[in-house]
Image 1: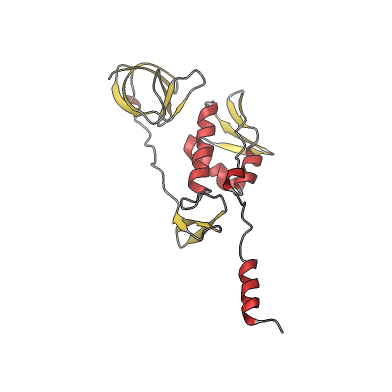
Image 2: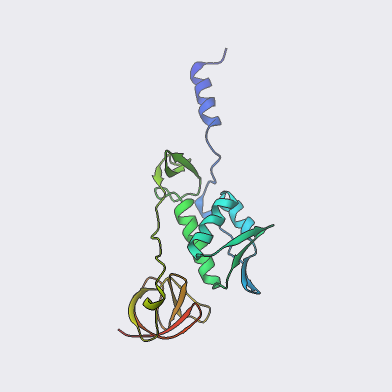
Length: 204
């Protein structure tokens, strides 16, 4: 007859998700992004979702919400309506990984998303900790008259463009700031607006 303690131990092991071991081996594929007509394509979308061990629909919903656009999953690719910077997509993949995958206690990716009522928790199978998913600020859509040429305003730089300019997102607008770095808060003057693109000069 099986020892009661051994039976309980075996049952406990069955409920443990296999961990990845050394977190140093956890490498998220770099997003391969290109412009196709009036859309932006994340070519290896399914590969990234697979490594993150998250549902593609959940990952896609996050990206669409952060980009403020519509899109679709097309086979292994994700297609977003509109033209977006490569670094913007890569930054969002990093944000998703940080918020929805990596354990804030042990730093490992051996986690699951679980529901506790209306709250989504990130539960770690490696160390047993859990935390609620952080809610990001909802960007308010500016009224047309609020963003105009000549206006001076404070913005926070989110990432760098391919040319090395700082980029800030204000509602549907993408704002370029020369010489600014991610994380900086700078005062700028809007010099020109072309569609959803705003060009600036430093005002501080």
